[in-house]
Image: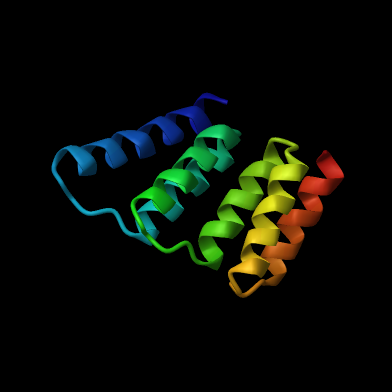
Length: 110
């Protein structure tokens, strides 16, 4: 557990350092932060990054959604995972096998 938590905390430290030094965040930065949070079981933090990304007007791509849906799956948050999936469909973002697998996993755990 510590190994995952330490990686998650380090990812947040890097994100914070970038913000402090006025380094612009892009989709790759947010994707990494969302994925890191999700892998550590921090689905709430992952979704917070997803929201911050939207507020910063950084376009979410399929990788972003896959990471967020996977984070929800880890937390057993199937409703949130399906909301993300419906958002992808609404915004015409291409689904992949990873997307479907993550959404199914979320439903199975919920």
